[in-house]
Image 1 (tube, rainbow, N blue to C red):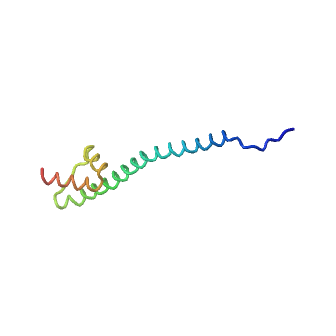
Image 2: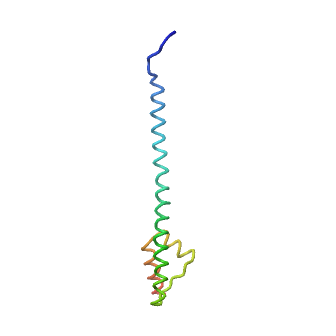
Image 3: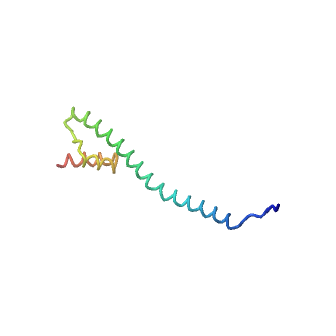
Amino acid sequence: MKVVNQIDIGAILAYAFGLLMLYAIGRMLLGPIRLVLRLIYNAVVGGLILVLLNFIGNYVGLHIALNPVNALVVGFLGVPGVLLLIALKSLL
């Protein structure tokens, strides 16, 4: 019975390369996930502000329609998107 107490350098390099590739793939996938989470956050906060604006705006005569275009503007820009819609509503 022969016991081998040697560490295979090829196996160590393969594990190191695998861990490096796992890290690289994780970093590449983390960027789009952050973007999607940021868009969801902006859409929720902007939508809530838009609903509150419409609720309060009924008393002062300001109403912004809830449609897909406005939802996209608010989703991408968040609070500045709501301000942009208010500015466009006052100009047009």
